[in-house]
Length: 184
Image 1 (cartoon, rainbow, N blue to C red):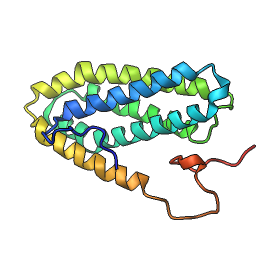
Image 2 (cartoon, helix red, strand yellow; image 1 turned 30 degrees about the vertical axis):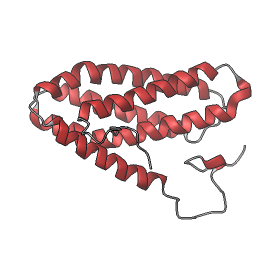
Image 3 (cartoon, rainbow, N blue to C red; image 1 turned 45 degrees about the vertical axis):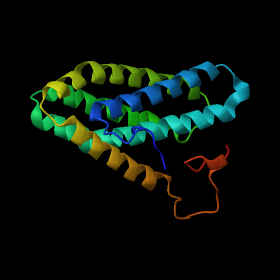
Image 4 (cartoon, helix red, strand yellow; image 1 turned 120 degrees about the horizontal axis):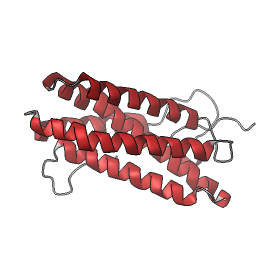
């Protein structure tokens, strides 16, 4: 079970702290990937990093889309801000779906990860600069919202990491969360 995004002391974590912690984790994963970008000898680590990046982004975007964005949208009058965030998430999902069927040795693998990282850096910057300021001024109970986000994240983490019901004889590649595609 993941403890990411939870306070260590048992104290409540507010929604913005939880989301910022997720952002920092993803940014550090992208930085580590970037340090390996031109190293073809470390394809296994690249594969693991991309798997973790995709997983963390999926989990994070789900709690934002299910809880944070609807709550914020209900108390602010800025459809453009919220709509842009939704569209950025859709672009992220598209790039993740491409990466889920790629190997580090595939053409455009590194470029796809880099573009995803750049798009997420822009999204994170805009979210933390604009959306978080609006959330602070909105009157939302950020502690209660943080508890809801943390609980849902834990729930999703358990669901997404549960072993899948076997549908074929292929085993996940070195404990990856996704089953690899057959070699070309």
